[in-house]
Length: 139
Image: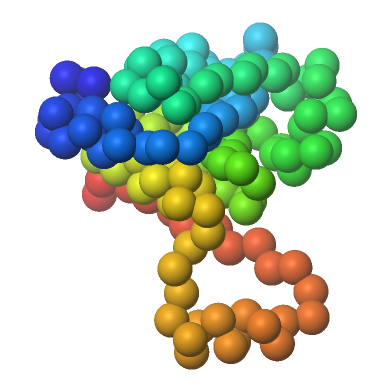
C-alpha cells in the first residue's frame, strides 16, 4: 500500500474491521488491460486484514456469479459484508481512488449505511430499485 500514500492510516482502518468482508473480483482473460493491476490492489488490501477475503470469477465463464452480483464489465469488485448491499467498484482502485474502496469496505463491515431520517424517509417511498453510480477521478 506504500504506492497509495497514507498507507499506515489505511492499514489501521482495515485492521480495525471486525466482521468478514469479501472482495468478489471479476476479471476476464482477453480485452481487459487493467484486470491484473486491479487484482494486485485487491490482493494487497486483503493482506491488511484477516477479515478481508478475495474470490475471483471470470466475467465470460462464470455466468451464474455474474448474474448473481449483477456486474457487466471487468475489472469489477463487489464489496460484500454479512449481506450484499450492492456496492460495486469498477476499474482499478489505485492512487487517490483507493479511498473510495476503503470506505466501501468499512461501510459493508458496519452493516448498513448511516442515513439521516430525512434521507431514509425519501428512500422508503421508492417503489422500485434504483441504481446509483458514483464516478471517481483525480482530475
